[in-house]
Length: 423
Image (cartoon, rainbow, N blue to C red):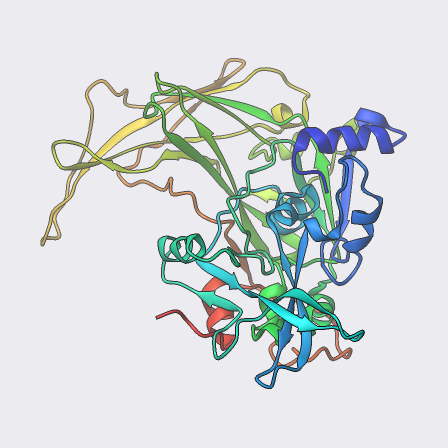
């Protein structure tokens, strides 16, 4: 439940007999799911004073049109998404951006059984939905800014704010058995009471158990990036036994001279050189390619779209600590002419930019590829799943049949839910 890696390390050091040598962390679906075992850790968590379940979950009471109580929905708070357990199970340590989804409620005075009254968070009166979708983040943020009883996200894997990436934890194995049906059975009633599709509560790759390794991580030091800006590193990884992929995203802020530094926990090469035979982990989650490091595109005074980008490989030895040093990378500056009303465009590279940038580590070098397009937008954690979704006809919580992977994508899951869109 720790809100950052430093505190997570402290908790591991205090609770484990291995101290700061704790190497593996396992999280199952029950620990990460409200309504299952998530409440138990909030009771025993003592790394911070006065922390309780209400810090992680907000209970919204649902009433029907006649004003009768019909159920409750647990809305997840920013503290829930900041917890290390959530960041591991839901995002595999990657950064995650919020989506244009808003949970709305109202403070309602209700009568208690003893004749008194109390104020509760309740679903909005009338035909307004508890969950609303917007066409853009700007619209969603404007709505929340003008409504004190509303928040971004709070459903399933949709966070309330940008969740930062973890530097020193990586997914190394997942259980073959999917927990999608189990999660649906746990969250179905609350989701139904709020009028949303229960499948939105199921995160991507909902395996029963996920195993993570704590590693030193590899340091990437970059140069020739835009000054005082954000650069984004992304790499796609495959979970072979689930036939699915996810993207790890990390960001760093550049200095006024365009340099930056970041630590990443996933390697892209040297998988065959490390394993149990020489005391290292047998990693089943592998990168599909090298990291792409890029800046957001911008317009220069000549009307060109300018971006900075480089590709860089990360050796396993640097991630697991067997090798020392950092990876140096220089970003290429690329400019593309934007043609309004036409299809032609051209790209140019500044004369002061070298033909190839070199990423070095202990004498090793890699030629970076240049690109005239930019892929640095800070995307949400993207994932694909080739397994068939057998939950579509089982949202009522049938106990029959085996679990099958179910992924909640933004548009289909929300639109299918019958949630009233905001005009």
